Length: 332
Ligand SMILES: NC(=O)c1ccc[n+]([C@@H]2O[C@H](COP(=O)([O-])OP(=O)(O)OC[C@H]3O[C@@H](n4cnc5c(N)ncnc54)[C@H](O)[C@@H]3O)[C@@H](O)[C@H]2O)c1
Image: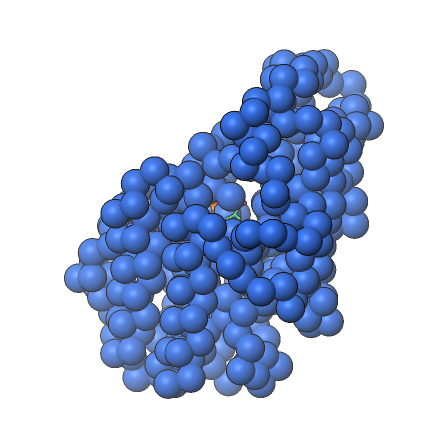
């Protein structure tokens, strides 16, 4: 079977591609495991072909014709990750709508032309929540986005529901908490949660722009990629009408992250963390939930990391130079 990842050059897209290649199979339309004969990575930045094992297509998700060509006339499983992430969509209103909303619609329209409805997994975000939030968001917390990015993700989820209802796709959407540790910084307000771990482990000092007690709902890329594949493989009747799942993210404060680095650094010479709170960053992250508890996803076997130490150890094993390959990319 053919699998497509949009955003295949990004942080999560690249890791998902590696995981699919390692598994070599995904559930087919009849739910039985089928070998992945072709993996296509689509992005407007050139994706890595992962040693020739993936086909790469450079294109713009905002271009309907390019997306029609990508999907073609063949049944496929599609993981839709391409996006302009939070700060980017906030700064460039038109670009955010073109990529995050029109791009999703182009993909859904291309799927409509297929003989069999493909499985389509959409990367949504806990940015769909906003306003006066509880410290822990749960399955029944009402979405009330306060950014263009959050609105675009929420509308994307609703489109997934409608195209599934009409039988054009078999869609599933995942609301992701903050995924960390990114191998490179980006411009999202959450980027400190990766930098506070990555920079000291690379031996570099880090000026942390939030106070030590600021908490974040955190999930590792390993668990996220497992969740994408597990949700893809679930028979549709396990999800029923509710096609959006909140993924759990454990609660960790900036101080917890710093402590986890110290506990897991081993013999590495680590950089220092200096606490230099930035009022603008504090204003943004101050209202964010410190934890996400997706009981429905957990009941389906899709759970959070066991501890912040597990997240730090995963980064050391997978992304530090001596431990494995790094992914690139630029988002919350
Ligand atoms: N990483 C997180 O913490 C997090 C949290 C919540 C949701 N998400 C969502 O998960 C998905 C993947 O996130 P990520 O961290 O890998 O982000 P990323 O920025 O690393 O990857 C997104 C990719 O989309 C590509 N892209 C942007 N505009 C495009 C266009 N016009 N056409 C084609 N490709 C385009 C970028 O080049 C990039 O490679 C995104 O949809 C993001 O909104 C991520």
